[in-house]
Image (cartoon, rainbow, N blue to C red; front, side, top):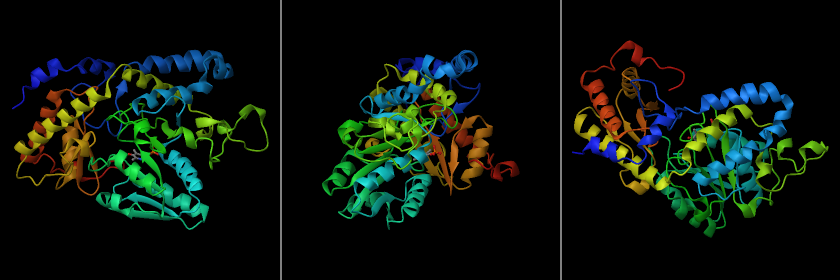
Length: 408
Ligand SMILES: *Cc1c(COP(=O)(O)O)cnc(C)c1O
């Protein structure tokens, strides 16, 4: 099998682990849901709270350039997703950012009524599209097809192709470049949700020509629970639509206090209300970890961590009804591994009780995120051993593991 110790010794990303606080005795395979705490965050929060807010009060907006934080953080994220400076801002939640870009895209394709998405999309994206279509009252149709039928469903009725690149349940990855190209050939626009892509794998928004993108700050970017999300708009669209969420922070001159909305030039028009400086400062510091890191190296390690885990689970846990849901082709998957698993909820609770943290997604999926900044190859093996123990010893079969909590 693999020489795991040698892999860890030679791993060029290994030193980054020290930049995270990871609880003793825990193998954390849920960084795709909530990234762990970067060590440097505590000092930053202390300084923003005590020095900036505490001492500067309202002057902080200028003296500490709080007002420019959405753009500074946006540019740091932009570097990870192939977006030019000035095309990304950090703001609001992924759900809200979807409304901003979907309303812009529908406005740019006003003669068409179809929003095309797939059944693998994250439900909040679909819910927000349904809500927006209802509010617009222009007979938009949200058309859902199976993930492998998206290509053939792209036709000239489609206004907007709205997809999440990596499926949150199975880890299946769409071909963003090919789908964007096909959409453009029929005159449709594209919105890509990068919640499971940004910080997980190389993304090149410029090369793929994607029109709009959104994504999450608290998953692979480690910005903390409820961290601000981000939004990208391709440069040539930026000044061609009027934002539907027309808040004062996206106004051309917020402090002119005009009675009429006029959108700011460029990406600033995607801002709505006052930025959340405390949580945005945390995300800002978390993003510094990516300085000088090659996404190619991150991707290589992520694939290898996942491959080792898959191999180990398949050889150790045979006969327990696990079924691999994640495609094994590297270009067809993201940075997580999912199995369908009988009694999956209880199995995951028992694993978590043993210090191996993944998560569960209805109806029967156990999910493991592979995050190369702080995981070791040995963790892949230990996690598979832990799963084997839970299954063979039926450690999951206890009342406390069978009872569902609110958040799974
Ligand atoms: C996690 C996730 C979200 C979360 O949206 P919030 O508004 O931040 O709660 C949205 N879309 C996808 C694809 C996700 O994975």
